[in-house]
Every structure is written in C-alpha cells, then in structure tokens.
Image (cartoon, rainbow, N blue to C red; front, side, top):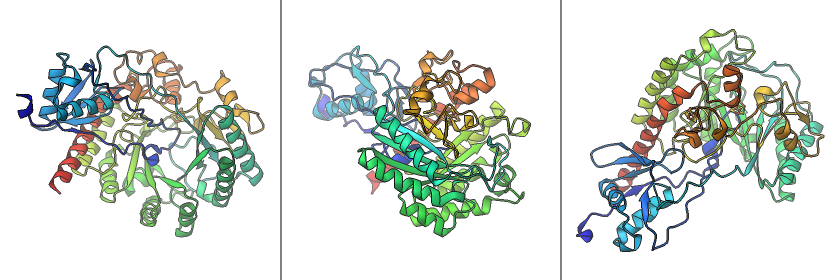
Length: 483
Ligand code: SF4
Ligand code: SF4
C-alpha cells in the first residue's frame, strides 16, 4: 500500500543565511541556524511534541515548532507521514520518498529522534560594533534619543575604535565582526566612514577576521556620489523610512522643519538601482502606524527589503504622547500591513523583519547583542552597551578588552537571556522572541528580568508572521512547479 501513496512534499527556505537578512537599526539578533544532524537509518522519528500547523489551503499547512524548528509548508501526504511516525515506524521501514521527506523534516526540526532533548540556541558568533561617526544630524525625528551636537569622530578616534573592536574580537574568540556606521547621520561624515572601513578591512584581514559593514542613514543627503562611495566600499545600506510622505514628514522633519520623505525615498530607489544591498528600517509609532500599509505596499512594489521596529520611549521623546503605541491599534495597523504583504509576497524570508526585534528564523537567547557581543563607540571613543545608552559609557577605546568591561558592567543595560526573564521562561515563543528590547522593558517596568511590555502584541502577531511565511513559501513553490 505504501508505494501507492503520493510522495510527500516539504517546502522550506534554504536562503536564510543571507547577511542582509538581519540588518536593523540597532543590534539585531543573529539568524544563525545550525541544522540538525541527519537521522541514522535505524532512527525512530517522532513529531516534535510542540509541533504546530496552520492551514494555508485545502492541501497545504505551514508547520513549525515555536522557538525550535524552521518553518516549512507540508502537503497532505507529508502530514499523513507525520501522523504515521507517531506510531514509531523506524526510518528504515519507510519507502525511499517518505524516508527522504522524514529526514528533511528531521533536519528542519519538525521531527526528532524519539525522546531527544531540544538543543540550546547557539551563541552568537559575530561581534557587532556601532561606530558613532558623528553626533550631528540634518533631521529632528520626534522619537530620537540623541542629544545632538555638531561634533564628529576624528581619524585618530576612528583608528582607535577599530583597534579596540578587533582587540575584543580576538580576545573573545569572534571570527566575524559587523561594523555599523551610524550617528547622528553617518553620511555627514562619509569620508571618515571610508577611512575607518578601509582601515578595518586591512586590520581584520591581518587577524583572519571576516569583516562586514553597513551604513545606517536617514537617506536625505545620499547623493549619487555618496552612494557610489558606499557601494565601492562594499558596504550595505539601511535607510530609515517611516511612512508615506504625510506620516514620514510629521515624524522625521529636517532640522529646519522641512519634509524629508521625498529625498529619503529617492535615495532608496537610487541605491537600489545602483545595486547596493539595501534595507529600509521602519519605526512604527502611534503617529505613523496608520500609514504603514501604504509604505509596505510601496516597498514591496519596488522590491525593497524592510524591517519593522517599534518605537521606544526615551528621555528626549517622553513628552510626545502621540508616539505611544496603543496595543489594539498597533496590532490592527500591523495586520493591515500584513494583508498588503499577503497580496505581494516577496522573494525573501519574512521571519526576521515583521515584528520588532523578534526573529522567527532561528533560535536565540537574547533579543539583541547589547551587553554581550556589542560595542557602541561614540565620537569621543567612549564605549557604551547600547546606542540608547550612549550618554552613559562604560569604558573607552583605551581598554585592553572593552567587550569584557561591557559584559562585567553591573550598572548599564542588562540583556538577560530569555530563560531568566519572568513571564518568558515557559513561553513557547521564547527563543524566537527572546523577550524584547531590554531598554524598553526597563523603561516600562524598572526591571530587566521580566517579559517585554510589547508581549501581548508579539504573541498576537507571531502566528500571523508564520502563516505569511508559509504563504510565501507555497506561492514560490507553486510558481516554480508551474514554470
Ligand atoms: S516577551 Fe512575551 S512573547 Fe516574548 S518570550 Fe517573553 S512571554 Fe514570550
Ligand atoms: S537594548 Fe534595545 S535599543 Fe539597545 S541594542 Fe538592544 S534592542 Fe536595540
């Protein structure tokens, strides 16, 4: 009878390790996926006890184990196979097509060897360095946390910053470093970005460290000449764009109170035409959430990648009640954006870009790198654990190992592993969510060791994201089959 069954189909994304996948406006979690070892022919596989499935259509469901597996689309025969494996059929007794499908589902983490424990999330293998190349900015965004001045980083400080970062990378065993050139507005000091990155490339190569870099910009001053410099340096680019013109301009006016949307959007399109690896960073506030569907439609229509970040209140923005996020309004606004995405499913994974700091693409213990594998180096060479704590540095570039000082600091941002957060420990989403931004949690609760104030929003949206990713995988699969 088994030979007469149609072959099971398992559809998953094998492209998720693209470095641009995780670019964000701060120290994003890494999407580091460690595939499970192939099961032996004598293995008895079982469905993971937390395996869940959401219906996509009459034939297909999206299957996942929250926090642990990859997300995959299964057809009816694949689901029937899982049901049979619940009866402990040895892998060797399955027909070849079913054994292959079962092996693939085991590699994705949907099945496991009977009784096997879940693996712990891997430790991040990359040091992230925020280089605050200038404290100046040509915009005055309503939610900015920075006390801006006209000061810029000097060449000597840039060299010292790169040296300090690489010292810490070597001392702490990191073979990969990501430089984030930021400010202020990084493009206002682009010659220093070029100098720092060329120096970093040479020094990293001498230490056998792989160096990667991205420029974070508001996009307003990115002339074709500046974009060409960024491109020639091999850097990626992230531009902040918060809505269609009316919403973006209300939230991100220039220093003279003028609109900035047209210039930022034009820069994004110029960068894309030039072939730059580009991500849009979209900060969602109470002020802008209503414009989110139109912005997302524009981005997808232009094949631009984007990531959604939630507004984080800070001392500079605290008087702006209009920025605050009402839970139900935020969820409704984001779901409206998801409906737009469903009509325009992109070629890239949606798992790491649709809910604030969460990454549903790979397990991780911390929501970001702050306090652990992150150095924020300001224009004077002082080093903080997070850019939102840049005015409270912990150490300087003169330290032998600045990362060690950051990790040992008991006063600054404490980025607690999710297993140690009250309310998160038993949450099924914990290794995809990791409990949210530590700074936002502390501001809202006075504690670092509790779940995020955005928890209800996260839990409402995570299943929607998994379903959208399932629809995306399915539509690409069906298009490939038809072609
Ligand atoms: S913040 Fe909420 S959704 Fe995230 S891990 Fe904690 S309990 Fe789960
Ligand atoms: S603590 Fe929050 S603001 Fe700071 S790097 Fe992490 S996610 Fe970003």
